[in-house]
Length: 147
Image: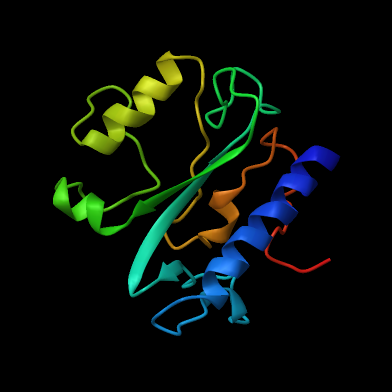
């Protein structure tokens, strides 16, 4: 857990520095609701879906880093989902008859031995998905809270 916490603290530092230098002056990391529903990372008027990967995740984890020696942060502009005509997200997957690209992605992860759990609701706080616990039964590390 210590290494996940260290990565989480570094993640908070990176996002805070970016937020502090946001040309649009949104400063999204300074919001009181970072760990709550409705918050999203925003920089220069662009919102991002952020995913993290690290070598401490096992091969069976969707955040496994495939032998990379370092942790990394992926910043995906949310508008890219629209450019690729992705359907709205749902917490449900049609495992037997996949109809959406999201279903197909989830099935591909599962078939590769890296299934990932979905939040019960698409309105689950985004901050909880940025840094996933090593095991689904582990408590979420609240990386956005200063230590």
